[in-house]
Image (cartoon, rainbow, N blue to C red):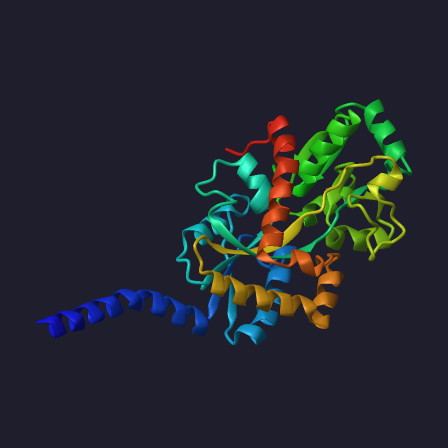
Amino acid sequence: MNLARRQFLQLAAGATALPAVSRFAWAQTYPLRPITMIVPFGTGGPTDTIARLMAEAMRTSLGQAVIIENVIGAAGSVGMGRVARAAPDGYTLGYGVWATHVVNAAAYALPYNVLTDFEPISLIASTPWLIVAKNAVPANDLKGLIAWLKGNPDKALVGSTGVGTPGHVGGVLFQTMTGARFQFVPYRSSAPVVQALLAGEIDMAILDPVTSLPQLRAGKIKAYAITGKTRLPAAPGIPTVDEAGLPGLHLTPWHGIWAPKRTPKDIISKLNAAVVDALANSVVRERIADQGMGIPPREQQTPDGLRAFQKAEIEKWWPIIKAAGIKVE
């Protein structure tokens, strides 16, 4: 009887340990099939371009394909909602940006929490934007632009790609810091904003380097400042806002990769290692630089680095967004 009892207890203990062992073995062999990375914006834009570059580079380390799925809607919140609801098994990732993981939480009533419903994997890249205007604007430097705007309150038209986007939020901060007043004109994407500038339909905009630099180099628009703390390598002749007379107007949208909350740490570590390897690749670095973006230092390419960076960005931008009453119904 005692022998039978001991055998029963041994079997029971073994059965209890099976799930833990299975989880450990599962994490050790991950990934066993292709991984889906959801990009919450359409194809062809800067976010999609960098996401596809990273997906292809991560394949080498992971030994499996990383397949991009574009899930658009509600400024990226539809796609990130899919990620938040996905199984925490490492086979669904989200390629998020400053707008999806900072701005949307202040401007939308989201069905998920941007801090607690995701596991950070790594910060990918960031870039300051440019304050640009049509050539007909009489100001030739940033101080002159501010004076012109303040001398013509509510007359200037400023293009953006919609409520809560970098061009809009940056414009709101510009107004707050300078006291200038102007009207926002929303467009579907950055391309029509540029076309409106070229046609003289709007006066100015805050735009990403990829969209604005070709027009600037062609002499079709003018640039006043970079919204970063350092000059842009792709356009070293453009001063920073600090140098141009508006210190502190720092707007540097960024990209990162997340998994659903409760994704096992071993899997997060494997994914992070794949990202770090990709960001160290010279071809990847060159392609990211071609998009006017910079890669973060190695110490920020960690899950904890992304978590801390996102929290700091939330602490900076949420008060600005909420004070301005930026809301999307």
